[in-house]
Image 1 (cartoon, each protein chain N blue to C red):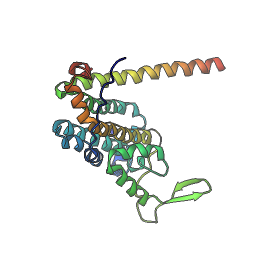
Image 2: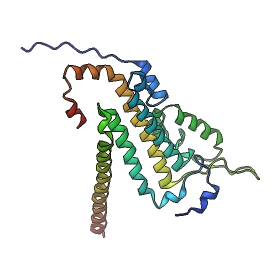
Image 3: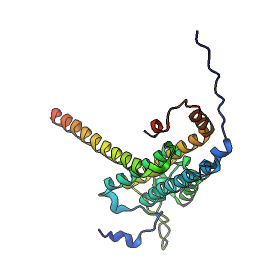
Length: 164
Length: 83
C-alpha cells in the first residue's frame, strides 16, 4: 500500500482577493507581482471601458440583464456604480409585463440613448468578459502562495510546460 | 467612415451605433484583450507575453471563424433539407 502524501495546506489571502476585486490587478501588486498587476489593471480596465464606450451605460443593467450583471460585477465596483447611475437615470413605463423607457420631460435631453442589437451585445460581452477574467485574477491571487510552493517543489511541472 | 451621429454622441452614455454593420471588427480587440489577460495570469515569466498573446488572439479569431463556417453550413443544410 502506498503511503499517503501529506495534504498540502492552502494559504488563502482574503485581503489580496478583496483588493483584486476592488481594483483589478491590485491583488497581484499586493503580493509583490507589480509588473503583472499593472498589466492586468490596465488591460481589464481598458476592456471594461471599451465595452462601455461601444454600448454606453445601457450595457450594465441589473434589472433587465441580471445574469450578465452577475459576471460584470466581478470586474470591481465600477460596473456596480455604472449600474447605480443607469438605474437612477432610467425612467420606465410599465404596461403589464412589458416596460419601455419614458420620454424625457419637454425641453430636456434624454439622459442616455438605449443601446440595441449587436452594439448592446458587444458592449455587454466586453464588460462581462472583463469581469470573468478578473475572477481568474482573484483565483490566481488567492492560490498564489500555494502555486509558488508547488512550483518550487516541482509538483506542477517545469516553467516551460506551464508557459504552454 | 464618418458617422453623422457622432456629432451628438456622448461617450459612455450613448452607444456607437455605426458599429451595427461593423460589429465583427470588434471581435479582434475582444480576442486581443482575452489573450493578453489570460496569458498575463498564466505565464510565470512575462518576457514572452506579446508573442504568446498574439498567437492566442489569432487562434481565438480563427476558431471563431471556423465555428461560424460550421454553423453556417449546418444552417444552410438544414434550410435546404427542410424545403
